[in-house]
Image 1 (cartoon, rainbow, N blue to C red):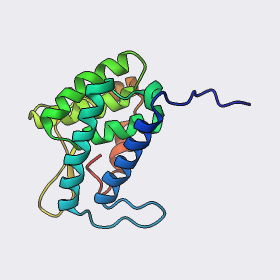
Image 2: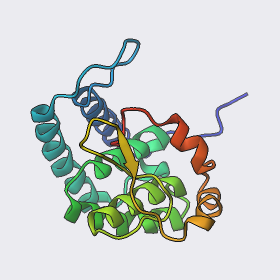
Image 3: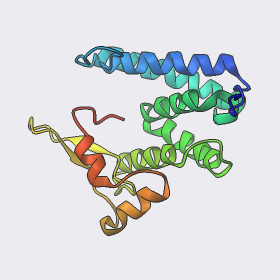
Image 4: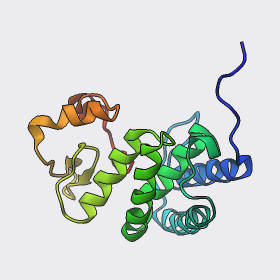
Length: 177
């Protein structure tokens, strides 16, 4: 049976985004097929700056690199790069991602995470409970404030995320996603 997913329209852009995501994760200490290591903060800054410049170029040329342009994995790579960019760039990406989600070109959970990240940077309560902060006291991470916490799981379900209790339980040291 043939694969129902058509190939991406921009395979070279997809490849670039996937390479950049690999560099992002490597700098953050994520290792495939082996235990993670301590993140390299200097390398993270360098990779994030380079990746943001590349994503800005892609956004200028093609708009948001959505599913039909680059495929599912590379669209997720674009989202991850935006997550790790400077707050001003995140706001720009958020507007474009919002449009891509409305057109079915990106999953709603991408928008949920980036929305929460932007709200956190603006010192506003998040909507989907995706953002945590290091407590700075050696005791791990705490959930960033959530707007209307009684309806958090309903909002999460609307964008394809599971219950927050499951997400919080699964969270470990990696609070940067």
